[in-house]
Image (tube, rainbow, N blue to C red):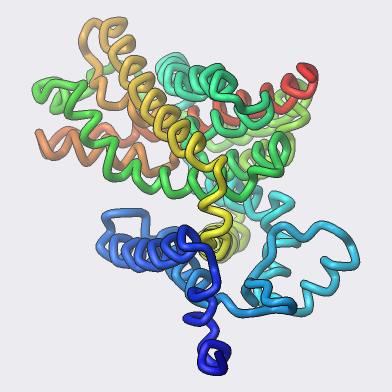
Length: 401
């Protein structure tokens, strides 16, 4: 027994339930795999490397507390009572980051601001109908998943939070789950980010399945010149932010962050651009990945509610990808077969990942074909449609109670 207390990470394995022990060992191995796959660029390295380390460390580093209670010194996401929270802030190393930046959506807003800074509205504003049509179609998974989730026994708030995964926008999943289903915040967020990284591996196969090779290599033919000035983009960002905040104040924090990032980009304030893009965005992404990994302890992941969420996440992202490609085909036929339907996958708003996936699949067929600019227009529009739909869910769901 003394030896078990000396090496408590191993000792706790001897006193926990077999399913928890198996879960801990499995999650340690999965964490290692995420680090390796992130380093190999198979999955998104910016999120997966810190997430993998956090996942392995939290499941290995369990120790005995009073009355043989098992826990860790990294984080306790379930503490909400004020006195207990003040105590745990002085004990758990990463609790301050979780409490003051993660559980209140600050990190989500910072990431959204960074997305705004790296987003160019030129092709969205030059081809608004094309971008909007694709983005709306790519919300199919977000819409279809909701009734399926309700039919599986989830409450309306939980169903909506799970459905938002179909938008493939991590900050929106963070935001919506805290607003609609705080009790499922941790598992929904962890599953969402795991699945978003798997888009790298899954969406290319979806494109190859639904878009014939001859269409994947097609160049987009258009007579419209893209000549949108920075002033026009600045005006658009201010007006769009104000109008959408009037209509959907529940989503105002994310809308403010996104359009402020765009405004800073178009204003050419170099010091702010460098600060947000090089410091804030990467710092927020790093701590986001790390916190997600730390939250992946076996007790949380093996919660019985997780299995429905795993199924719903696959449905949401899969149907959204199919919906986006359907949108690409609609534009293809509207434009008299002068449009590459592969661009449709970019309507799933994982900026800039889905746009890069579309370009990679096109270039694999024909290297001279460049569609990234159109794909980015659809992807940025996807961010807006996802934010709007999230705002609608957050506003309407409480009315259903």
